[in-house]
Length: 423
Ligand code: AMP
Ligand code: GLY
Image (cartoon, rainbow, N blue to C red; front, side, top):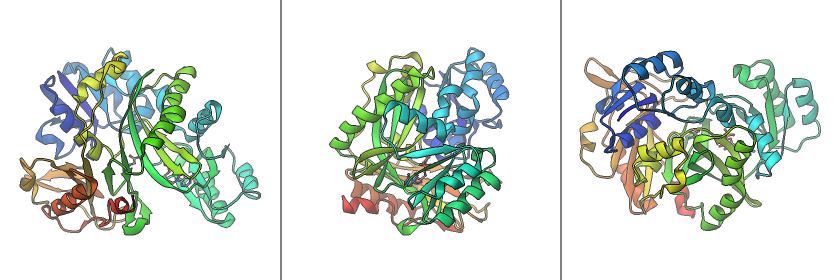
């Protein structure tokens, strides 16, 4: 089989690495890819939003399966365009990717079908939003409706902060049209868990759980980032939580989408908050998490291509999804200053230390080749992943492994997985 992967980050690297393990696959392309992916895939210089060019490329190279890693192309309708051209592609159509593309849609869906989530109201004009804030309880959460690189969520401790937040989102339009509508919702407290799943329209199969660390600095301080590290499984995702979510959240979401005429095929990523009143949905994503995929996929036993095909064909009920009985930790190596100002272009050394080192991986996020050398090319540069027989061993292994990689301005959090100690 010939497979095309769309995207260029650490998530796409681990997807490509897992696809490369499938005995069915003999050639992988990645658009646009990165330096790490180019080790086992041919990277092509086509952007993830250039749907027509991507479809033409897939036809020319007789691609058997395209896998989309990123949210933007899915929400933009890449799947519909490929299907119209008769091309096989894994991911939700535009009318289903709205589950991630519009927070107002997803909140209304949860309300309509009784899926537990924070109480909320949607607003499409700033006057109504400001009036609502007069009688609200604080803290309160403001969310831009559309995609905003995970940055369109404002947690406001006071009414003044919330008033300023409405201005930022709806009047100053810091996130552009994503802020035309906003969701104002109740502030929840509890542990966060990421649960990824495969969905074929009817059947949903849950992967092992994970936890992300979104803030830039130790102790969950500093600005929100794309994710500074992950661990899997989450010890807080207990059998009791799993039973509750299976009854009240997972299948209900899939059935709700089908009932709305928006049959969902692809990945649903459930961002859950484990509150004292039980698990509630914080958000849905229509793709693998980054860097959740980096700790979940190395633990998955199945041939991922078979699972992707089962989702497309509607035969996921016949797949026995299995994960290793161990743990994995990912520590992101970033450029100092991320997510604000940082420098790029520094040579990276030490990759050879990971060659043939079982259970250790380096997934590239922001890297590129320059004069035959791999250099830093982004805020999040690499994800160093290690497995271990349990979470503590995996964490120790991952932090040991971060020492094997060097580049100028290397920055990481030193407390990824610290929460494990409280379990
Ligand atoms: P989201 O993109 O909706 O997952 O929000 C990003 C982050 O904001 C989440 O991972 C939470 O840490 C936080 N957050 C979102 N909604 C709430 C809420 N209702 N209460 C507390 N924290 C929230
Ligand atoms: N790590 C969070 C996300 O991928 O949205």
